[in-house]
Image (cartoon, rainbow, N blue to C red; front, side, top):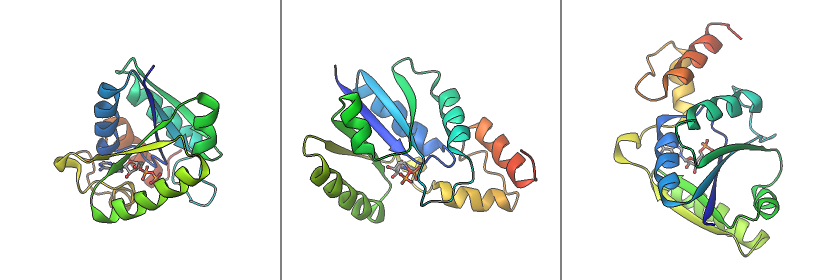
Length: 161
Ligand code: ADP
């Protein structure tokens, strides 16, 4: 079975992430979206919250599942017997970073193949960090994230749960 993983922080999920999920999901029989709990990155939403949001968002695709991982993605892939790792790239800056990470993952586990998927041009400028900054100033981010994420951002920045 042709399976792939799409790992990320997804803090929070954006329309750019969903576009990659939709496109990668149409290429593979199964796509596992892996929500990474990165201890070195301070996240706005907890890993539980990000996973719950992603599960809700991935519901329309029957071949897409969502998992959580608080250890190396290459270990997750070894455990699940998956060799293909998808990463989205917005431009040259993303590419140089992603290329380096791909080299590291290859060194850690040679059977892993990283595939880069260029962003759809309409999502080129979408970045979780900028969206959080905009939302913190109560700017309208409804064109950048799905409605449930827009709601969660607005609740978070208005002192909500
Ligand atoms: P990480 O912290 O692992 O970089 P992110 O949540 O920022 O996780 O991103 C997860 C993946 O989605 C990365 O491969 C990133 O390059 C990709 N990505 C983020 N935003 C976009 C976008 N607008 N279009 C395409 N890919 C994107």
